[in-house]
Image: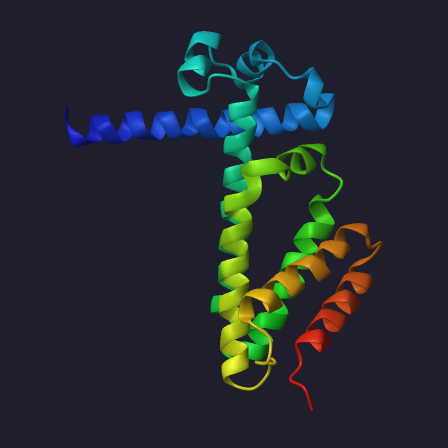
Length: 189
């Protein structure tokens, strides 16, 4: 087949996939998780049920794909913040604040809560922990973060501490939580 034809088919498949993910997330937000069916998704997306089943076997697989896309977008966002700040200490602070704000925004989302249970989230958590650990290591290398505790433990501390951002009531409270978390990383005097 000609390259243009292949590109057109690939673009169409990607558009159908993205529309399915977006539509499913919107339906869950509107109707609740239990109220969403494959028939409803097909109808709202404007594709046939048979076509939908070629892409996804069930609603759960769509939700898993939606969550994977969301995690990738969040990690991309954090990477962009990381890449725009030269100082490792400031870079760590800005990434942790962005992460805490993401937790704050998505905490009440029924779909996000479901997806953050069990084995589905293990790979995403590992990727996030590795990302933060690398930032902690860089900040420790210039003396901005303590080095008497293993970096895996420090990155775990950051993520655990900032999980409390989901219960905060304001962005100012989130920023205070980030400052307290960063104080816990400070080198011992």
